[in-house]
Amino acid sequence: SEELQRKKIIGPDDFIRHDIIGKGSFGEVYLVEKLWNNQLYAMKVLKKEKVKNQNLTKYAKTERNIFAKINHPFVVKLDSAFQTDTKLYLVLQYCPGYIFCCCWKN
Image 1 (cartoon, rainbow, N blue to C red):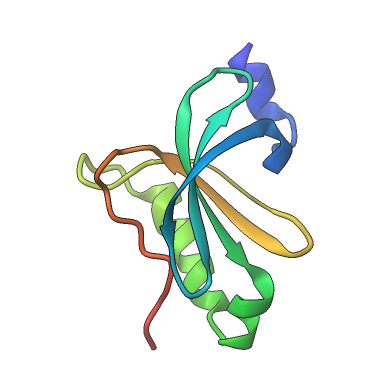
Image 2: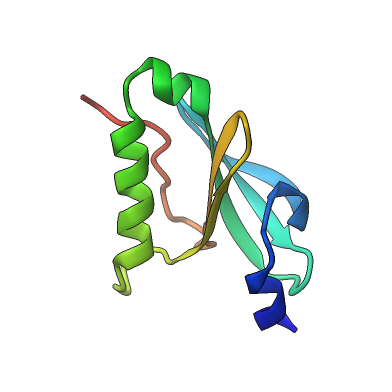
């Protein structure tokens, strides 16, 4: 069941990557499909090295925390967040036409 799947450790291999739907200075946003429910999501992928080199770690953490806490009809919902050795991932509700920002300004 989906509830059991949510309890397991999730990672990039749990998704099928379809298309790139956004690109920025620190990463990309992909249209992905979750393997166990066949739903489409937007997966924001940030390269840790670029985030660290630009001293933007606090902005990445803040973005993740805001998506996790906010519940508003005009803000996409966070499905999951995880990381690998080299990348940070935010899996967000897929909303065609929504503009994802892949960079921060100091």
